[in-house]
Image (cartoon, rainbow, N blue to C red; front, side):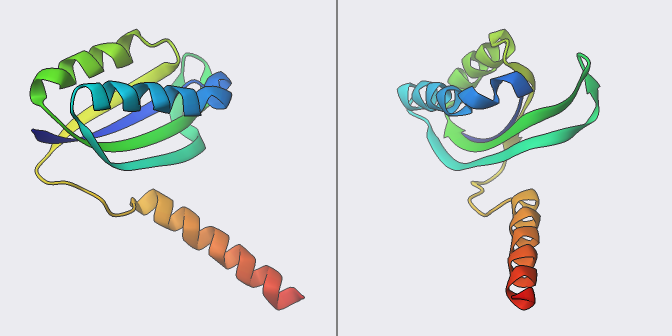
Length: 121
């Protein structure tokens, strides 16, 4: 079993169906005896450059442990899914469970906003 980090960029029109998409891929990973160690929904974000005339998309980060025989099937599934604009699968040396820097900065930003609200009241 190897560790992989996967980032999915999903079409913004499919934002309502993110939960269904995640359930589908969780079931595929479970069927192939894989384990999801981290799953982060980064939400709708600005793209660095337009992809298919789109400027925003929905981002998902997954860290999984799965047998390397099954990762090709998973990548093929990502490629065939029309709601996924782009994806990247990176092999990592160890399991990653900590929160990503993007999600940390998002939490800090919301924390600062809540502190500002408390101060003004």
